Amino acid sequence: MNAVLYSFYVSQLTCFSGCPGRLARLLQAAGGPEALFRCPEQDLYGLGVPLRFHEIAMMTAFRDPAKLEALMEDCERKGIRYIPDGDPAYPERFRVLSDPPPGIFVKGEVPPAASPAVAVIGARNCTSYGRDMALFFGQAFGKQGIPVISGMAVGIDGYAMRGALSSGGTSFAVLAGGADLCYPRENIDLYHRLPASGGILTDKPPGYAGKKYDFPFRNRLISALSDAVIVLEAAMHSGTSITVGYALEQGKEVFALPGRVGDRLSDGCNSLLKNGAQVLTAPEDVFQFLGIRVGQDTVKKRAVSLTKEEKAVADLVGQTPADMETLLEKSAFPLTVLTEVLLRLEIKGVVTKQALEGYVRVPG
Image 1 (spheres, rainbow, N blue to C red):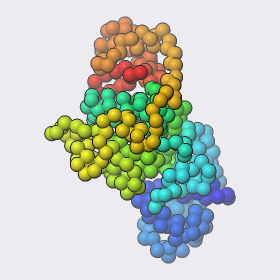
Image 2 (tube, rainbow, N blue to C red; image 1 turned 30 degrees about the vertical axis):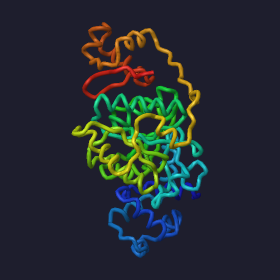
Image 3 (cartoon, one colour; image 1 turned 180 degrees about the vertical axis):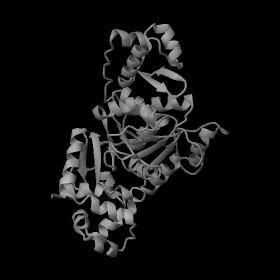
Image 4 (cartoon, one colour; image 1 turned 90 degrees about the horizontal axis):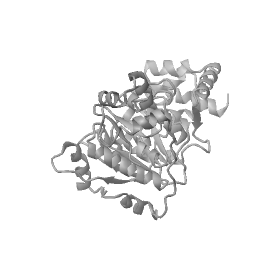
């Protein structure tokens, strides 16, 4: 076996996904991926890291080179690259973590090392104002060639990423599960678009469905890839606060959008501002921090060609949400045709679907 397969072996050990720090300590105690792979089962207990029975079982179950090679080939068939720590393509920003992933699985590309990047995060059940701000800031960052990093969650995450793509920019999603699984399914359009205009990254192997405890540790990777973390809407003590905590540990700047006093989804942002976060009033606040002079757009919006059917449906969708019943009545298309056309428009970044309210036109 080669060094890549030894690293790939460690990345299969999802029994440690709830505590990557334990896996990092185990690797250090063993002497690296190859040493852990070759360590006799009875000696694993003497490495100084408490191990459970199911962890030992998984560590020994994957010690079949043929099985590992078959899993690697399956990744390639699914369009997923495995990049081990030590590979030039491995994100340099991960190496400063106390518990860096032994490798990452990627569909598309990784964020360019030389480019500043921002994480945009916030509430899943965002307001229409939060949605508009996420689209607006995402577009502004995209136009300046600043990659938008997020978790591809519904709400603020997804809208910011769509904004970046709609302006011809790039965006990168960091998932808590395997790169072959779209979670959440509501963002299937983003899942299909990102590999061509950024990428999808995860430290979890294909087929692994992220558990609740995986998301906080995923958030440390989102902040690690970013120079600044942008919070647009957030309740108190939400998942957003976990990402902010990691960002502060990593020495990243945090910006928060001020909100109305007494608004539950503004409480988190207002609390961050009270505790020293930078006030976010315009994209220029972030540009100035990143040392970017705003001139001509560094990235031009890609032209989107629409079929006759797509244009007819797109013309019916505006900034006010239109539900399926309304679109069926106005378009006169059968339900099956309308559903297919709307999906194509989502993939092209022309319209976006809001969970309960219907479809809206993506600005730009």
